[in-house]
Image 1 (cartoon, rainbow, N blue to C red):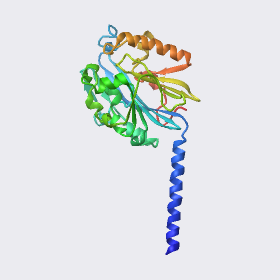
Image 2 (image 1 turned 90 degrees about the vertical axis):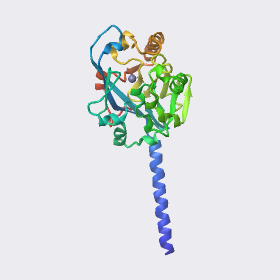
Image 3 (image 1 turned 180 degrees about the vertical axis):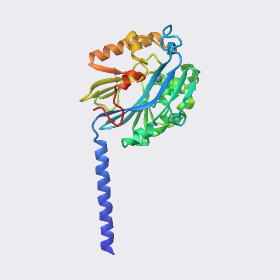
Image 4 (image 1 turned 135 degrees about the vertical axis):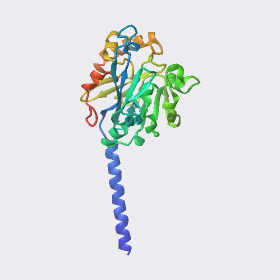
Length: 283
Ligand SMILES: [Zn+2]
């Protein structure tokens, strides 16, 4: 009988050891960047993105989300369109201007590579528009990383003034939050850095990732929505601060040159077509 008890204790001990080893393996993951398909947006009149050009023309934008796996933790960058849209194959129309569709949920894409949203450590959001916070509620444990102006606009008295709809990010009120007033080196080694890039919204930010094999990448947020606007430094009619938007794009261009980095424009459908999607990754 006693022997049986010791045997059982031994087995339990071995299981605990194995669990610890698995945990350690998980926490020693090398730096990786996964790209998820978080939907698409048909814009019915693209001239709202560059006033005076392309009146009445239709254009489709991609909606991308990202997972950064770092030895010290995990970060989701932007939360895309809501997974619930996957149940509406015809899409959902907003302001008679945007038709939003999701074909594959973010939750399913994360599960496919062995990550559960509930375990994610950090949630970096470029800005609080609905196409970037759609799945924010999937990450209740994550520390929300936001610039102070964005937090104030989103949770202040008049979020609608900035194009924010609080019903799309209600759950974030309960998340731990780190409010930023500048660039922020998330893991302390310079490989994953939030870049304060104001203009599109009051506290817009981008994400800079330095990958050992792939090189340096700036994930745009909505610094620009597609290559043509980036090249010509054009600003959408709905940006919070037009002058600041142009200045930020010029500064971002200098930053890219100085750091030998490339810009991934998150909404650019054509550029995204050439970028590997999860389960593939960049390291
Ligand atoms: Zn957007």
